[in-house]
Length: 108
Image 1 (cartoon, helix red, strand yellow):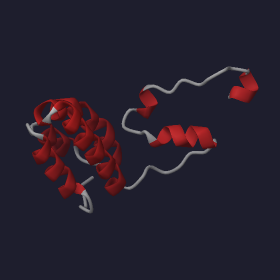
Image 2: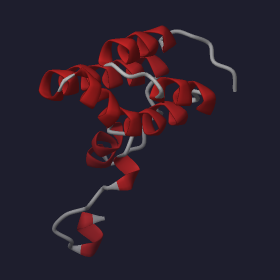
Image 3: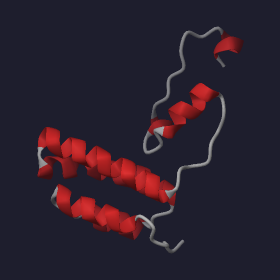
Image 4: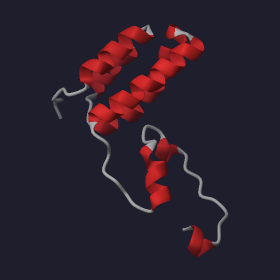
């Protein structure tokens, strides 16, 4: 796109919500399959841990709630499971719930 249009940059916004791997794909000029659920969950757990260090457990969970659907629904996690996760009130409980997702076979 940059070569054909002469644009100085390309903006990626909503497409990257819950899909941070999109930026690497765009930079490489290719489209990769979505990472496995285990990778998605691990990335979410890292984000949650960093947020909890920065803003405390309860506030980090409130912040992370918006990410859950973007990351997990695209990976095939049922909406009901995501909603249950959104009801958790501290980072340790959410982290534990996320850890329980990795390796699980999920209903479609």
